[in-house]
Image 1: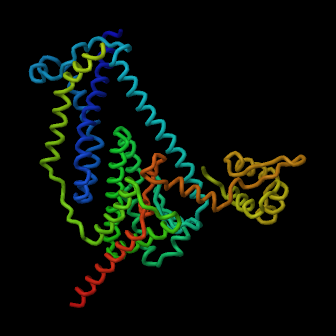
Image 2: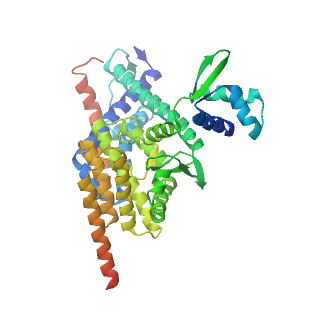
Image 3: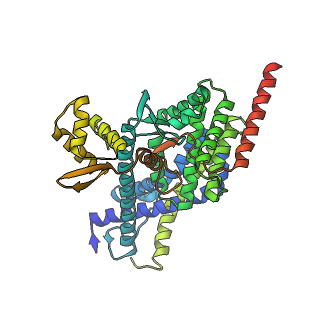
Length: 320
Length: 129
């Protein structure tokens, strides 16, 4: 049994973890119910909403933790107003309790996520530099890969590199190549590889099915944003759309076409959505700021109000 | 994993010549770009350590050969780097032109093409008016 300052800090971290779980549950419910509604949002609003969804549990956790720290160290003025910030054994902490177990499990999962992502990043960096070495530089950070598969992509955190394969070049017209390269350069300009990476880390704290949904929505938003950048460069949207479908055909020729399961269907929707978006057939709206603010405030209130109740509820089953 | 200029040249040489020992590599490059036998020996060692070459001891010398063919290696790298954002093996480090488009069937693609053609036609008519 720990007592004193160390116990206070371990209890505060446990509060942060519980708050995170509560806020995560609130966001999960909203994403599950409103996932399809995201498709009706304007690209910038959708991106902002998605970032909000994945960061809200962290923000809520920080805010509630701050309230507890504030109350504990600056008690008199705070205690009177924030009666909800109650934790009835702040001075003691036992590793052989549900608090200890919660703390250990959370730290273990956090360590696992950071290790996994760090390992993948390192592997990706090695593969990317090898591919760069085997490619031929064309112009400013654009590389040509001699390969029989049609592919174009952008990667890199600090130095963003766009790659296009020789098969893609030989199967497309000059105009289509301009669309593909402008699209990839837009990804590089928007720093999308790094943002996608960060987003994927944040989604790892959600249930796998929700995480997949969130990543798909972010992918679609980023792709539409890059498509938008191509249109801004005075390229006809119908040319961008037809290039997209042509590349889909080229990709399909390399891999067997199949009717899809849940994920693949949604993947299909991504291309469909992009084409509809380019043809101006989607009536996209901005986010309702009032509802979004209300959701943030309600989540924070839910967390701060429920933390003590949740604590007592758990302790009807487990000991301290 | 970075590759130096000489490493790239030696790798390309081994892709074209299947299997060679250090003397054969040295004899080939000596006329083109000079360098000592040791330079080529250490280059082959580095490529072996980078797991791009495999080697087999025949007599007193190692015979080096490329671990995978050029197109195969490039294919593996592209696949690994761009692997689907949906999959656990992560392509969140990549933004691809049509990352999702392979999971499509013929009817869906045809439907989209017709839609684009209709839109083009509409725009053309508008311009003519």
